[in-house]
Image 1 (tube, rainbow, N blue to C red):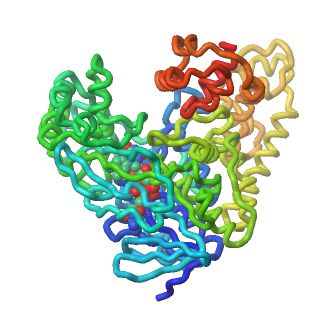
Image 2 (image 1 turned 135 degrees about the horizontal axis):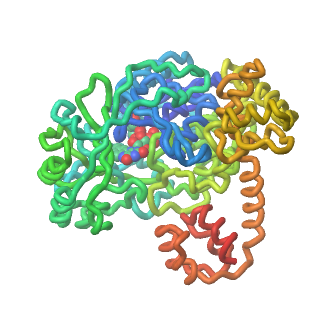
Image 3 (image 1 turned 90 degrees about the horizontal axis):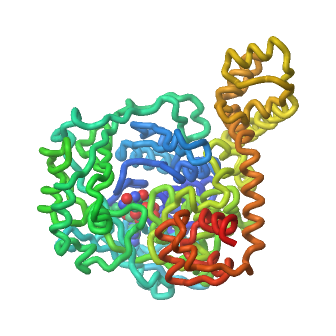
Length: 617
Ligand SMILES: Cc1cc2nc3c(=O)[nH]c(=O)nc-3n(C[C@H](O)[C@H](O)[C@H](O)COP(=O)(O)OP(=O)(O)OC[C@H]3O[C@@H](n4cnc5c(N)ncnc54)[C@H](O)[C@@H]3O)c2cc1C
């Protein structure tokens, strides 16, 4: 068997699979070495792809030529648009997946690539020499490459906790990774290990769904992969159900505080602030007993149900008791108990924006090993590491996504410019430009980056045609006037478009607050017999709607840059109702005296900066 490759990737989770998929498209010889214990792109936690801020990432990956959107569409058992009532800028797609079908498709798509070799073994050590890297697998076989991408997820020195029980492992049923010791002696890791947790999995035949609120798949939610333009679904669609915790649930959890590994000192690692365990919720918010629990199927033919919202590492007997206090789960049988995993994390301030470890050229990191949490965050880094390792191998110019036009750019800049003290998740408030960085305009934002890859495929043709159509429709919208006459006035009245006392531009009609710009543009193009795809109409209509807000956002961000030297009163800031609790804590700890000092505090959200810039100084 061949042991020399252009690029070697360690770990076939969401980051590694994405890196392998894109690197193979550059025609390089690529190997993906991953543990035989877990499937490629498997979902150890919630069986869903997308969500607020994350749907945007999946579409960005898709527009760059990635795999995640294709897999999610194939495995989707429920499609929903989140934040539908809140305006287009923060709307995101979420797809509940059949986790087995998702991973099977990952194996299928990656397995078909002729220049990709998939090796199912654990890597034990990594050494680096002037000529490149030498990997040794558990059976003592050596592999060589000039570029390696490490995407080992939660496996580095992983330790699992369920109550008092502690086992080594990367996730349930999987051996840990020993830490790739020879390599990691030279790598800086974060001072604290990180931890993440998962809820127990319930037997779907033991749940009383009739007392819960069903949530159905939305037939109008768009598929993730841009070439899947129809609304057809590959699989039959299943409902999820909503239930809630109550005072009995929380009192059981609270009375077992001393047995909680998170709170009794057994777990030292820092958990994700925005994905708290049920223990976190119980002990931190002592006056709140009611928390949502979404009862989500893990697959069409799987017996397991994922109760989203009750991630826990409490002892098994406590899990059994508190689960059965929840409405509809009175007789629920736990098939796999919840647990937490603690693992080592790379200090990402040592990485360049290409995801390369600066002091060891040719070594790239991506995914949860970089301190992020979530499949989409992992895949977003994976595709960028795969692209940049390939471009570097080919002596081509690196590709950096700007934070102003992509969530992946926001995430990577946040990772490499700050010391990480807790797991990082993407959400819309992390972007200064979130009115512009939307799902509907992904191709407009990402096309310039995809072009730089010079990978000519069906996707490129689609994107070029799409943008040509967008431009054409924009010109039409721009140049059309509506004249106030009897006929048009009546038409406006019949369609609830508002008054037409004077001539107005078509753009003004689209911007009217009570009109849905997408519906209006769709109706009007149809009326004039002009045919555009619904995706093109959406992109143009929403862009017109947000035009003014985006101009204002640009001015705001220019203002922020000029404000650095201004003095501020941090004591006033921590009293403000418009600043989040997390930001206030960070401000209190750092006591910034100028706006620039505030800007440099890790974790201060762009929304806070914008608020302070606009209102306080
Ligand atoms: C218990 C648990 C709870 C989680 N909770 C959440 C959550 O609530 N929300 C959320 O969004 N995300 C959650 N996640 C995180 C989510 O699973 C990850 O963010 C995502 O899977 C990370 O992708 P990755 O590619 O970086 O790593 P992983 O998906 O972990 O993949 C790593 C891969 O590397 C392989 N590997 C590791 N070491 C070696 C080695 N030495 N040799 C060969 N192969 C190796 C492993 O077999 C695995 O295939 C949770 C994960 C776990 C385990």
